[in-house]
Amino acid sequence: MKKLITLATLLMVGALSAFPVWAEYPQFTALVKKASPAVVNIRTTRAPSKGLEGLDEQDVPEIFKRFFREMPDRRAPGPGAGSGFIIESDGYILTNNHVVDGAEEIIVALSDRREREAVIVGQDALSDLAVLKIEGEDFPTLDMGSSDNLEAGQWVVAIGSPFGFEHSVTAGIVSATGRSLPENNGNYVPFIQTDVAINPGNSGGPLLDLNGKVVGINSQIFTRSGGFMGLSFAIPIDVAMEVAEQLKEKGVVSRGWLGVLIQRVDRDLAESFGLDRPAGALVTQVFADSPAEAGGLREGDIILSFNGDMIDLSSDLPHLVGRTRAESVATLEIMRSGKRQQLKVTIGKLDDVEVGSRSNNATSAANGNRVGIDIVDLEDQDKQRFEISRGVLVSQVYPGAARDAGIQRGDVLTDFDGEAISNAEQLETLIAALPGGIAVHIRIVRNKRPQYLALKMPAK
Image (cartoon, rainbow, N blue to C red; front, side, top):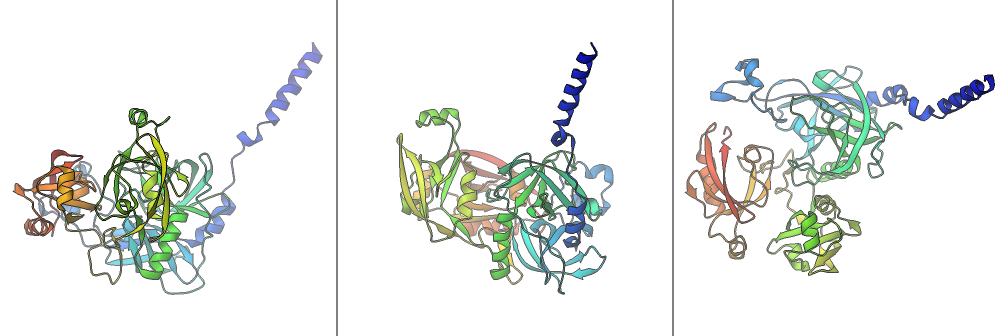
């Protein structure tokens, strides 16, 4: 009996000794001490926004504020706007565009309590990134890692200033990579999803791996309460540094352009097109005079791969096209009429103004027109394709009133506040003439189906 008990004890001890990997958590102390000096707090000053009935937001009782949606770029003065980190020792800082967009003054607080006024080197609305510059030299910097090799389950650490609490540290794991967010501008960012606790004020701060290298920039959270709910999203550092280099060099970002509208392929569509599983991006429209048209793409084609990268989800395609250099030749594998074939397409350049990039000396609006859209006139062949006789094409949607109303890129806007729209100039005139704070109804055509939306006009 004693032998049995001894044997059982040995087996139990042996079993427990086999679980050190599960029982032990990584130590973040050394990592945080090394990385924290390069993380900064960013405070901005903005002109107060006008709320309901022209009231300043500070005049609205707290009990009513919860009933109104808070936008990340709302204009209100106050400290703790966000975070950032130093990428070069002579004072270049990377952060989110929405942290500094529209700021009249930007103050960067360093870890040693020194403060510097920053200037904006360049901004890019599509990736939600901005590069700042402060005067000085020999600043501490962070080492850049790579986001391409991140895997779900990998430990990551965030440092930032949630709610103004500077140099707060949180940790978690990567939940997924390559996420496309429905409200993201054109889906040009393949977000890293994590369960790291991120709150307002963390925006722009670094996401670090266990080696202390930056793998992402904390950018967005999914929330119904206004606080952390276990879903955080970071911009991959590989994408961010590509943008940062262009902003430093030119103040704007150039992206590849294919010129198609696409949709996801579900199980039924896959079967009908002869695919063995749902995959690829189904082309629903090829824009006139676009690289896609010149390369021979047709409506109804399913793009299965782009330069050798498989398209599992339709949202993968914008990520790949956007990072492709303009004028380069891309190889597309497509499914057409039940047969696979390859096409060579010379990638075009997505216009800098159209994507909402700008620098300090830019003369055009960063976020489209007053309601946050770019529009172009329809050609006769476009009217035939959409089966409509009037309207303008929405070529880009930015954060603002139009996006809040539900307008999407590729929509055709046919009526505005009861007036039929025949060209872009007419619509711009109507938009400019209306006062702020009123709601107007608009008619759009999406996928050949008309619908009405309510648009709240922003202040002039």
